[in-house]
Length: 171
Image 1 (cartoon, rainbow, N blue to C red):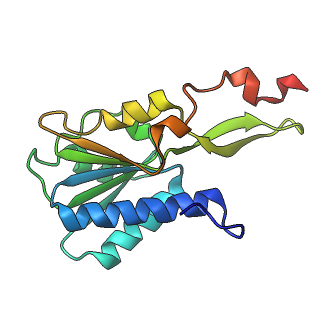
Image 2: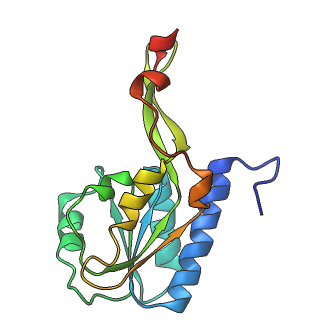
């Protein structure tokens, strides 16, 4: 169901991603990569997996993560099982993480925008279809894989708006 009037879109999408992830965990023992919009969502999902699913390991993967954790993720063996890697869109351009078989995408990203006050801030927005396709490319690099989306691809913008369209330069 869509979000209710008291629920914000990002909260709804995070709950949807959790549900999709738990369904995938129940159906598979494969390595799963989850794309969310920011560090707080990464931490939330990692905590949830560590509490809700024994036997599964969850790794955060973002610019804010210790180098040692990133090295552990990059060193996962090809046939690693029961692993969840939770990343921002930074993981799109990352090196291949071979055991990933399933990608779950929240379809949300944070973009840097300049406000009317001249300050830059992160603004949540829908990811463009091309970015979502890039995320899907993280699965099945060395074998079959699949992608699961929190919203249908057709509901997303085709491409990212030009930076000038999201900046205060249009004042």
